[in-house]
Length: 165
Ligand SMILES: [Zn+2]
Image 1 (tube, rainbow, N blue to C red):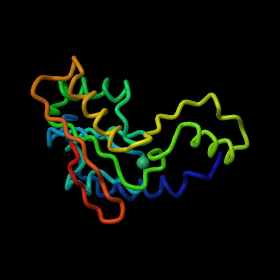
Image 2: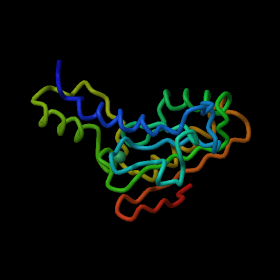
Image 3: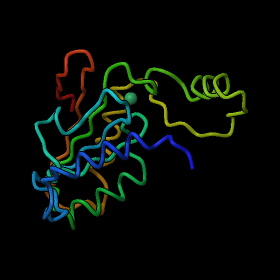
Image 4: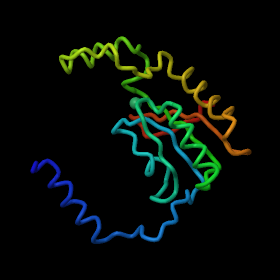
């Protein structure tokens, strides 16, 4: 068997020795859901002063509002105690300020394979995409009534989050 995960699982053994999050309900204790990018520089819980159990975190390339994100927000706002949704994009995002064609080309160059058939949800203009994504959440018919939805930008060089919409 591969040894690739051995060190990771050893780290988990150490984590479990002092585990302190047992008994959480699975509801979002801070009433919050966060939609954000998969980028390794974005670490949502500490960025927002949160702890495990506080928020539903939904991540994908670019932190975009996709059909599956909307599906998750329907569940989160009706069943998991979420009353606020933050959509957080970030500076220097690999899937912003570009085109799907350019990203496909980068993947083709890196893989040596034809990536022309792979969809990529790339934001040409990041702020426009953020405003459209926030509007998509706000207008989604199955979202719970009264949910607050905001669009934000995280600066990966300062750690600061600012509100955009
Ligand atoms: Zn990103």
